[in-house]
Length: 271
Image (cartoon, rainbow, N blue to C red; front, side, top):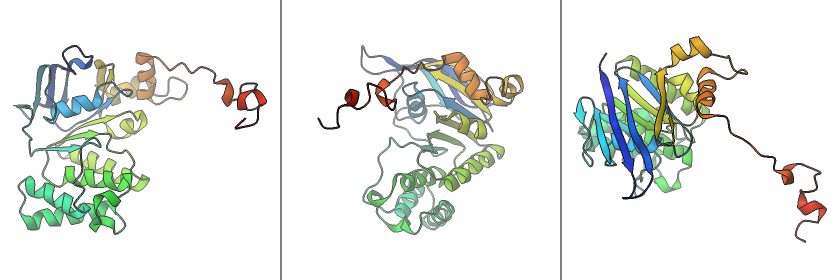
């Protein structure tokens, strides 16, 4: 099986003397698989996605998608991208936004409209698909981002927190789309901090911490060796804590009801 996505010693540094958001990152995503890229906030997940999408120039290293070296500023119509960090078309409706992306990807107008209608019906915007995007809720905007990523004919999906703000029905629909896409030969890089969600959808995982790759592997192999072996935690969550260390949570005395520290040691609020 060939790799659809490859990173070799990829690094991104912001500013000449700034910190590395990603440092010497090397891993591959095989065709027909879903790799969950997990880590805490600031681990480098979004930076990695943006470098692979050609939206950020790496400071060092090489990145290849579908056999082609990624060049900053040059989009690839074979790649679908979901990210809440991108600007929306505030002057367009949801339907118009999805059709526009389809047209930019080379679809004939009628086919772009047909696919947009099917996607928006599937994700159900409650009749708001013809309203302007600024009037949408966070979840509705996320549905439009997902639809824009799927309206073309992608071979690779780069998904940065794609389930963010989605309701339970839309999340289930997207999870099934991802599974079917991979089963049909597509490849998915799914960046998320939700380990349990990744474990339900992905076939492989890669753990980032402070911009560096800590470990990568198969979720089925991980589950066979460690599933439910650590206090009832699912395998990926258990492995994540083993590698990164569980958080230390100090006592916040003012949150303990009836303590001397709560309500300024008994003083009335506002005094």
